[in-house]
Amino acid sequence: MELYLDTADVQAVKRLARVLPLAGVTTNPSIVASGKTPVNEVLPALKEALGNKGRLFAQVMAPQAEQMVEEAQKLRAMVDDLVVKVPVTAEGLAAIKQLKTMGIPTLGTAVYGASQGLLAALAGADYVAPYVNRLDAQGGDGIQTVKDLQQLLKLHTPGAKVLAASFKTPRQALACLLAGCESITLPLDVAQQIITTPAVNAAVEKFEQDWLNAFGTSGL
Ligand code: E4P
Figure 1 (cartoon, rainbow, N blue to C red):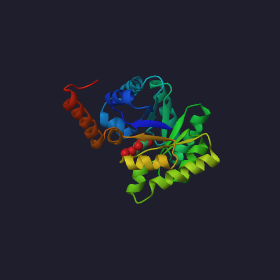
Figure 2 (tube, rainbow, N blue to C red):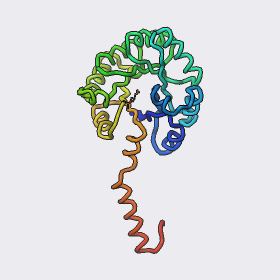
Figure 3 (cartoon, rainbow, N blue to C red):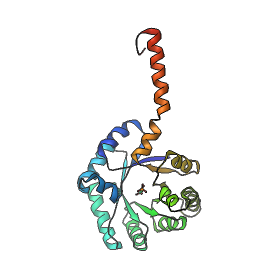
Figure 4 (cartoon, rainbow, N blue to C red):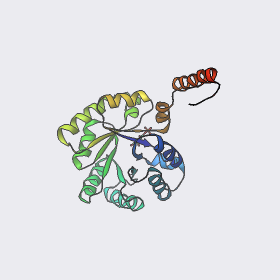
């Protein structure tokens, strides 16, 4: 499986790339805007923080396919192996088709339904990102959508991957992985909750204290 962080926080990526088996970093316009660093500065910095092997994803903003394709080229000029995120609107599908012919890898984003995701994959998207928590929040079933999409891609577009996104809890991420999802992107707070739970810290502190009480020194 592939594990991504959904963030534009360069320092956090540096810190967590040391700890986690990261496949890369995903961003979206809201995430980049929240950091307030211009996109042409933050994307190369994120790429550097990830190192050679990590993949970076960034999203186009334009509503029309032709402009999406131009923006995709601008993003690729900032980071040459960047995967371009394209919202799966009608224009987005046209842009994905065009980018496929140009050899530019894409992720179909803002996916709220399995059939919408399948269309992105049929158009040539390498990844499709269903929004798990946003689906749940509007009364849908994020995990079921992931399962359906996973099955559809396996049947009809075996080259495309589900990269599940929009998580608010570790439980949602786990359910997604149990459903067979091959890649997920986690916001920093969810990643942090998985790495550091209070019970684990308490257990480690107790080991240290017992050792110190018995031997008067910490460590071996
Ligand atoms: C990824 O493609 C999405 O942009 C992102 O995960 C959305 O997450 P949110 O619902 O927490 O904003």
